[in-house]
Amino acid sequence: MLDAYNTSKEIGEAAPEIAIFAIGAIEQHSVHLPLGTDWLGIADLAQRVAAELDAFLATPLPFSMSQCHGPMAGTVWLKPKTLAAVLRDVAHSLFAQGFRKVLVLNGHGGNFVLEAEIRRINLSNPDLILLMPPIFARHPDDPVIWDKGPDVHAEEAETSHQLFINPHNVKSGRVDYLPPVGREFLDYAYMGFISEHGAWGHPSYGTAEKGEKFVAFRVKLIAEWARQTFARVEDLRQARGGEA
Image 1: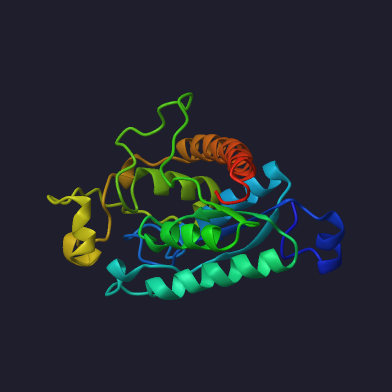
Image 2: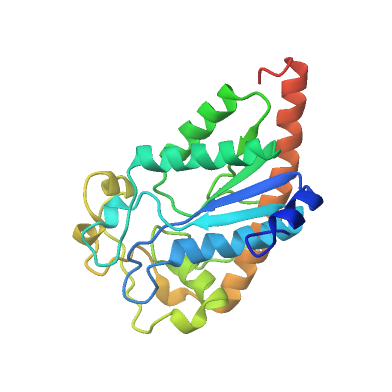
């Protein structure tokens, strides 16, 4: 794996085939998790996936579309068009230096603009392949890890991940709460209006052991998905004369 700690010369000489660009978020995560939960989590996964794929890891982006957490202290967000422009500029800069395969790892469920922008970039440049694995993808062989399901925010899964990679910044006093509304309400109202303490799920069930299992299987799944999907897209493009 190569990243920002390497020199330009080292990266150029190694000429990795794949570049990885991870996108996190800086937003409230209830009373027990740090603001950087999404960023820290996806940065950790991206580093592990980059090692599996022998890829270049571009420095993960900390900010994204966190408007729904806006009124709560510490939250920082980008407008959808800003995030799309950042992704486009990063992809073009990687392409300019020779990368033809870019794996985008999304660490925040609210970044709905990414799929549309990835589609536009791929259609506009037949020599570049941008891929983004589904954020909630699972493998059929994955064990059942969660007692209460993935839920939505600052829940069992995110708490477990942070307890594994970042335990010293996980606070006590976790608040379990399931709002009496559907997830689509995040399109209509701020999280602080839906859940007083900013949690949506059961963080009290989080453990470092669950987090370790989650990371191991998530890394395996993403690496396998990337290898297979890059190969499939290449085959499709060759079959269609570069138009896929």
